[in-house]
Length: 211
Image (tube, rainbow, N blue to C red; front, side):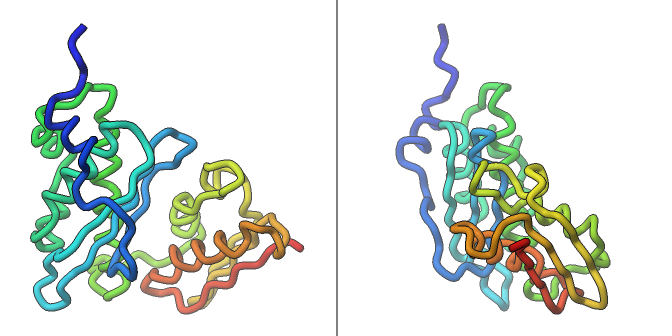
């Protein structure tokens, strides 16, 4: 039986480039979930004048394809402007790796989405979003789908951890079905504030626990 991975995939899997957590990134994106089998976090440092990605790192939880595609995509993005990096596609990544098994194509998509999420995070924080969508309850829910529930490894929306969301006059209030003294409460609160606080029209994020 033919081995499913190319030599280049194995090289990037065994010795991934740009791997590790970045301290104080200018932008970061997280896609996937360990519970689903694959997760990628992408961190970027951006030159404020040229908008060139000067440094980029990733953390990955998953298979060889996941790690290899995140490695190659961070290679492709380094030295590019934000607009250039947005145009990197999962097909481009797969071609650079000499092909991927069809069942693993989602790994390339995940890494690309992680990069795009990091770029969007940077753009939101620096007021570079041209199409400014008003923050609604649905927008908040979409953001919260990227906040993990450590109890399950799934997001807080799918696990019904969020009891109520309200948006009014630049203030977002999120009620979480956990006691305030729960061991994961501080981490969940920090993640929620980070995901929502960068929205252009949000001035305050209030996270309330049930007890």
